[in-house]
Length: 456
Image 1 (spheres, rainbow, N blue to C red):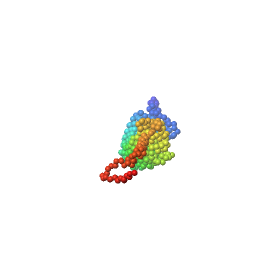
Image 2 (cartoon, one colour):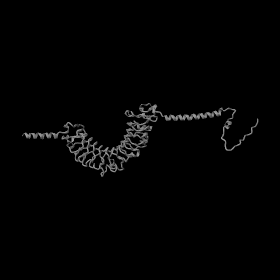
Image 3 (cartoon, rainbow, N blue to C red):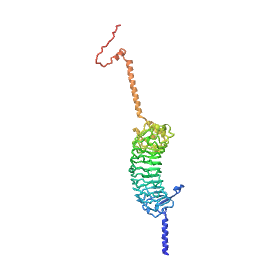
Image 4 (cartoon, one colour):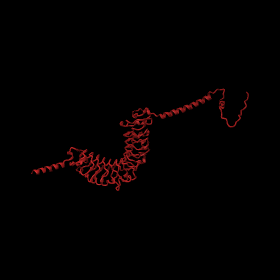
């Protein structure tokens, strides 16, 4: 009988342990989401800083929504009770040292968001995502991926956002199409793609031909020297940190839906006429840290908005950290419509051609470093602290002085001429005075003929 009670106690204890969830442990933090949104209902579980977390015998709450296993120094994702759930929607495995994801390790049929960034993945098994077919978002940034030859996205039919930043994938993409079913197989449902810092040298002509619904593209921090054929469906485009030397209106001709454009830290020297004239939906434009940029054409947004800015959609413009010295006053009308304008950190020449900027409604936090670079007496002065009388044009002053000098010289010559004809002594004929002026001798002599003088 005693043996029976002991066995019963062990079974009961075992059942209790198996039924205990992570929320009953002392190494995880759980909180319940009380929002009315049904998709967000459930437990948010955070189990970071525990390298043995996948070996724990605790189970997941029945209504778990989000599980955070980041920063656990995990090297392998393998089968575990913590990775089996019919309700889990978000899984964070970022900031570990993961080198391998075992086949069938992720048995999460409701999973929509997966973060594997900041790991050491070189290869992903083709069946690693076999049981997460509802996945919509995946972050693979900051791994060691060099090719997609052993990665298949074909069966991720609901995937609409993928982040591949800072993987050395550039060489493998120069002759392949991410969206081609015979290639790497991203579906045409992809709406957001981030391939920043992948050592991409060129974007071939048909790279985005199958990206039918792409709305956001981040292709910054690569080695692109030219603007490529941009998908016309884009609403957000980031071309920053590329050695692009020039842009033109033709580059953005068909981007009728584009709302956000970032052109930071390029090698462009000017913003030419009509560069953004076709971007009628553009609301946010960043042109920051362009250290070769010295010219911004007043016609950059077209001619019409200079006279009537009612249809000017742009709300936020940043030109900070470049080498601009002045801006044409013709831009006063469109710039006056902006909600936010940042002109800080340029080499502004504070003369009469720039004083109009003080009329703009620039927010206080955006003019602390809006300062003069020249002329020397105004160096480092805050433009909005200066009185308008200091915005003079020395060049115009020199021109006026030149004109005055020329007029004075002409008056002097006129005065000398009048003196000669009015105040020459009467006994000397003015005509004789003129005749006595030395004349250069010629190569032959002409005998003068004088009329006889009659005696009176």
